[in-house]
Image (cartoon, rainbow, N blue to C red):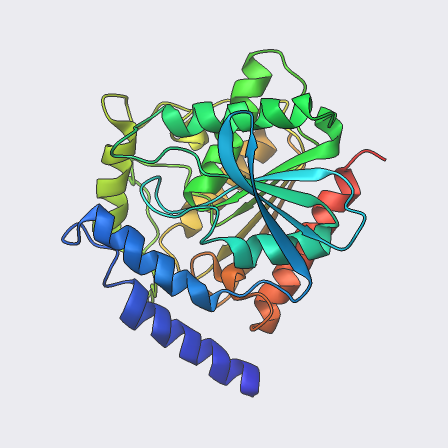
Length: 297
């Protein structure tokens, strides 16, 4: 009963405080400030530690839990490619560090509209190469991300594959944004977080002069063959439900080991409420197990 009440309260909070900010009517600079404050409610677990660092020339936050982390996760934060940062995602990365037993490295990739595609992808690749330079082997690194960061995670794996480079041990994506054309957006009865007008504006700011169907912008249009095992989590109350399902279908079509989890009555990137909401905590535990299972010893 208490958890049901908490779900209701969190849903109302997102709907009343976050969703109204994510609109083209609000300047991006103001969106960044307000969302930065809103993420303060996403709390990391006690015992998580954070270090400002630079990896591959990209500023980042390194997150760990415990004294002996094993392996690394390159975590790409969400925010429609226009907002969000390594700092806003300390809650979700702290919990993922706890459940995966890994060091989580979250780069502050460049954002649109100041730096459109391929800046975010270039920075993510630079951070990946930076982890390799630190001595991690590809099979000791997982890539994960939420929302735009989820799409970016898949795009990075595709780019590495196309360059003939070794791939990460696994992919984990929360509410991935993988079709920026928005031609097949889901229409839930309740959508507490996202507005299609905002995601449409963000898509065009990020893509710039590139086609929205470019597979490195919208991975659902690409060839996913050869990608590592993928875990996809999504809520049923979000316009990106179809994105997640279509990503899973495309991955299965290309023989990628894929697991899709749809959480009924939960919203976009509900995992930010880990440590508060039991189902969010359980989702992060599943993600951590997926990452651990596929990492090399």
